[in-house]
Length: 97
Image 1 (cartoon, helix red, strand yellow):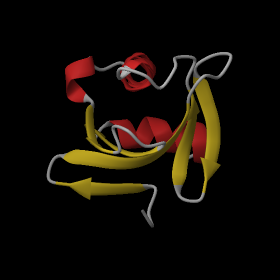
Image 2 (cartoon, one colour; image 1 turned 30 degrees about the vertical axis):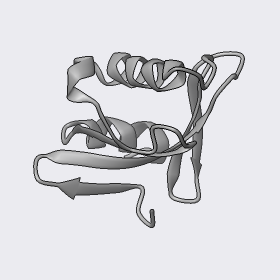
Image 3 (cartoon, helix red, strand yellow; image 1 turned 180 degrees about the horizontal axis):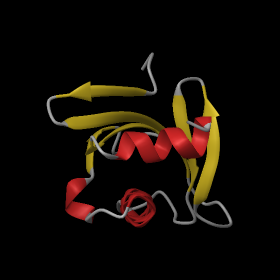
């Protein structure tokens, strides 16, 4: 995971560091080439992953089925596949352009 964003086919791959069992679900910035996301759900039975996908879906305004957990389903470090159109919104929020 050496780039925050990369394009693979028609998908945007994003490195995510999940921080489960937080007080609320929210973005927590970018560090070590990973988008940090605090997640209110516990990391059991896929609850934190489900919460992460729901949060990203709402933020990006896309369907949950468009967000794919490519790797890291049992890890805090994950790779998420998003629609390519998500890049512009994420860059604007986190980098101001």
